[in-house]
Length: 425
Ligand code: UD1
Image (cartoon, protein in one colour):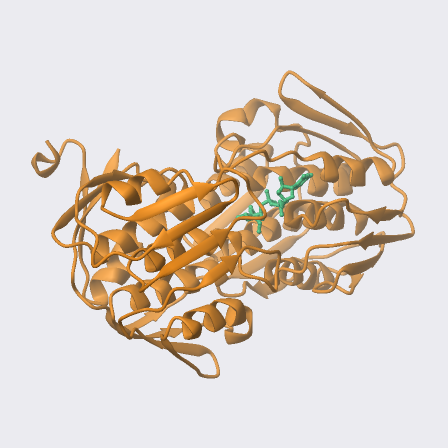
């Protein structure tokens, strides 16, 4: 397994361009199988989760061509609705659950293994299933597989009990091909939901209200291929913003949608960081000492749970005591032990972490416990005094394109080593 070695203490300087949004494209690629057609998708990031999704679709029979960040997905020939043999691939990512909605929409049948993904707490899919059942599907979960069949898919009024990104997108995927009107209430409003809806509408779907908490979908009989460009990744953008703030750097982050970053911009500004918005860019200038702040993770437009771990690293060196309350995933504090090993002063009480700033973090060997914790460990390494070794970076590869090259271009001293490398022995 690869590891990162980071020599801390170098302020990030320069420019970085953000790639397409992981959580949007992982809904868009399955959406492309909703008809016998061919779609061209631009701004597709080269990350492990995307590559796995491509492999699964190819195994199901889709023809997929990739050139740089452009993907052509051709499903003119029928593909299989049975994903049960590909448990290894589906088990390594959360978004494999979107195959349920997409295959149910196209074939009225789907067999898909239960999804994997980061171990950050209880992650049921009961709201997805409730939605599919409301649309007319019978759902059986046995031997680790979700088996669905719907002689007819009929539009329905669905009230989500919790605001769920995955359930909102999954229900949209099936409902676009149902007969009649579906209303999803208490829908999630994340930018990637709007992006998947925009893609579906370009394919001929009729979705209104994406980005609000009530989404209305009128099912259509026919859909067709389209050309689409994925939005920039909100979480990757936030990660670079925090890396610049933590290292007292000065960077311009290009190809971003500043509106998507408002919750992060507001918190960083409160900490004393200078954040300047441009048309499709954000400049971040870190000013130390950082001030302590309180953060509560919330569904969009609130502070994203996926950025609480990187944010915690900033808090470890801020003046005073900060708090983070994690209201989405109850076990998203596993990375705290790693930061403690670097000298961070953190106590956890139920869903709240209290973090009292220390003068600096000290470099040591740490490990990544999940994707976003991995990003946090990298930021910790960038500010620690000395050489930090971060193991299990396979988690980071799932969601960050060219992280090490981008950071190196910004002046970081970071290299990737495999465990066979003498540097790691
Ligand atoms: C997605 C993102 C993940 C992000 C999260 C919250 C993808 C592939 N993953 O995950 O990066 O951290 O949104 O922004 O897009 N819940 C239920 N029942 C359900 C579904 C969810 O109780 O059927 C609960 C979850 O346990 C959690 C909350 O709802 O407490 C939000 O989860 P959800 O928005 O569905 O997250 P994911 O789709 O798993």
